[in-house]
Image (cartoon, rainbow, N blue to C red):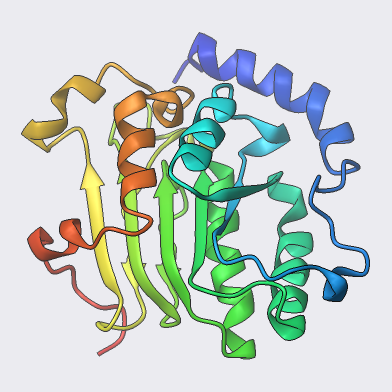
Length: 227
């Protein structure tokens, strides 16, 4: 199978950016964070490989307009995000629901972040994934998970695809939204893996569902990975 032009361009950007992206610390890294005032509206946002998410600034604008404080990380900084989350909760400088958004490789990172905080008794209220490619099983400490993706003929290229996710526990409210088969989302089908997270409807839906429970009432019940 011939690699799509967009995929080849992405790989070039990946090679150019991967060496520097992991050296960049989060803009919100907390030294002495126990002295800070509690934050109740933080949203952890995980970018794709080499920081890929061209219109991330639009997502950040939407989050801020909705009253949230985005805390953005590269995929290779997920462990930093985990450490910050655990320390902030320990110190009491972060309160309220834990909310995580991830796109592409960053969606896998967001799932991994939720998995890493589970042993600390931390519940993730919202895990919102865009084009997660790795068929992960969402851990039982996640209350609600929305996974927006699209199946395509190019799904043979693993990291350039979107896949459904499973859940470890039936207590997790999970919605797998495949825009390729959902007639209400047919206008999003012009997107591809590299542009899905930049789509205005996708971004607005993700921001809206950080606090709204409306989608869960209309979910189809996926099977659990474990009974």
